[in-house]
Image 1 (cartoon, rainbow, N blue to C red):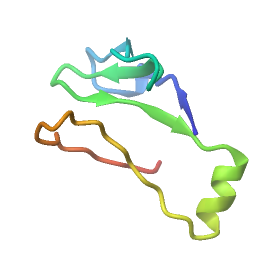
Image 2: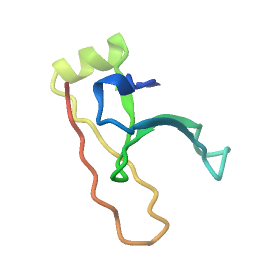
Image 3: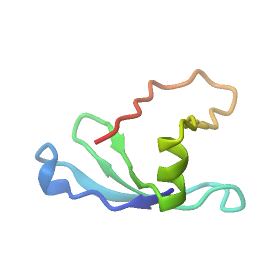
Length: 80
């Protein structure tokens, strides 16, 4: 999967695009994301042909969140 820029014209007014930078570049890469006025951070992902084939074949999708031992924030995973 590859992160893709979000078209903010289709989102809530006041939404801005940001590059969310990782504090540990050894582990994670920068993430292009949209930040809404009410604090949501939204990233968009494009599946490769191989990813699509795996999902169509019944493979599960996993979400990994490094919470640093702190309570996990609410997360949504949406298709569309």
